[in-house]
Image 1 (spheres, rainbow, N blue to C red):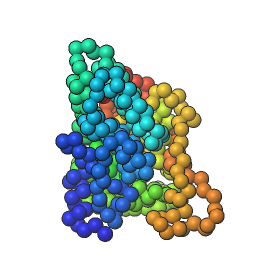
Image 2 (image 1 turned 135 degrees about the vertical axis):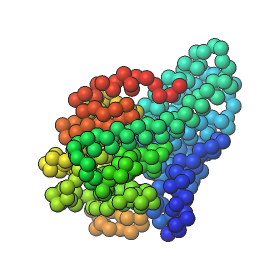
Image 3 (image 1 turned 90 degrees about the vertical axis):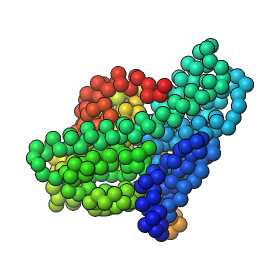
Image 4 (image 1 turned 90 degrees about the horizontal axis):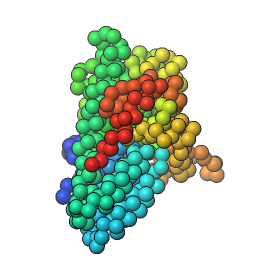
Length: 369
């Protein structure tokens, strides 16, 4: 087990460490029993870290994927702008394939490909300047993600507090992990919870274990304990009983992709929580940066759902918990229909799913420059 010093250190140093052309990731497969950083030396390392879920969470996937490309480019020399452009396009498309459901990596890749094409056409710069500007654009993604998360936390906390129309503290339920371990820092849905706690308005957060990968039990609980946020862990199957017995003020979850009609893909188990919340008249919020909104996908029916290996269901670590020979179905995500979502919280404000078109102009403005 990691000692107290190691645990406290991770909350200070964050899950993604990048400086002076060096990238290290906290291996989230080992948490909470071991705190260990792995070195990412290029795109191949980045692809495997994403695919194996050593890093996860849609914003973090995009940041790590793009930084792995920046690391690789810094070590290489290019004879022409064309060769650099071709290298960038190929590597970015490869990174997108690591986990296709999380749209943030695809959006970042599209924006970076547009940037590298623009730099290629600019006759006033040479290949060295082109490479430098491209790498700087990737590095700027880190700071922007942190700022966006703080804005999401502020908007979301105020929406929840406005909904209770009293001076009481709130009880909030969340699913999976959407905190510092899933983003550059602070978090999306967990950022909302952090903001509530900072105002002294959070009575308790309930986090699901999030089977079969246990991101809630391993990662969300880990973050909440370290920051001394009042929290209770529960099994995924206990949500309905919790809502019946406790006065839950709101549910707040993250998103890996939001469709043009407001349907939302998130970690498997989110859909059933939304159904239960609707039955118990509990507001259901989705917290996600604009980079998670894909206006090219008309509805959740068109979102590709990643399916994971059976081993994740049949084993915990190396210990088999399921009968040998049983077949498994293991989708990593499900889709929550827009009609079950109270509102979507972004860094630019809050909208109801039916009003998501209002955010289209913001998504057209590239976050990469």
